[in-house]
Image (cartoon, rainbow, N blue to C red):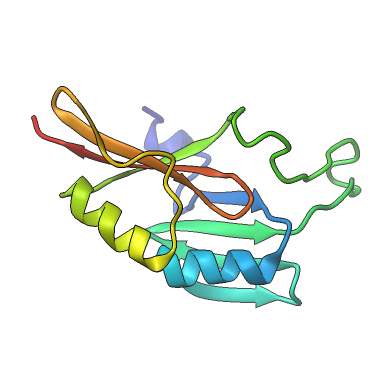
Length: 137
């Protein structure tokens, strides 16, 4: 844990950046399917969303800038090779699954029971992976 006097993140918030290929399609998915709230839009190439108490920044692909001279922002190239995913802890996985499916989320499988956990996975339009998980401890 970081000491309060030496905390470099005092009064800060964490934002996750997701690179998307089609901003309109992604906006529809995150707002209409997942229920995210639009905080701010920047000229059609970036969108700030509030989702479950967190910030998501959707951006379109882009190349290096002066402050990140060797970095390229790209959409996931192979949807079945994941380096980042989200887990959303839910009260009732089956109920959440049905609601999201009805709204247009495409799941990899229906809810699967693994011991005290029931979970299933879906992707956004660009392949970013989400899990909904119910834990019965």
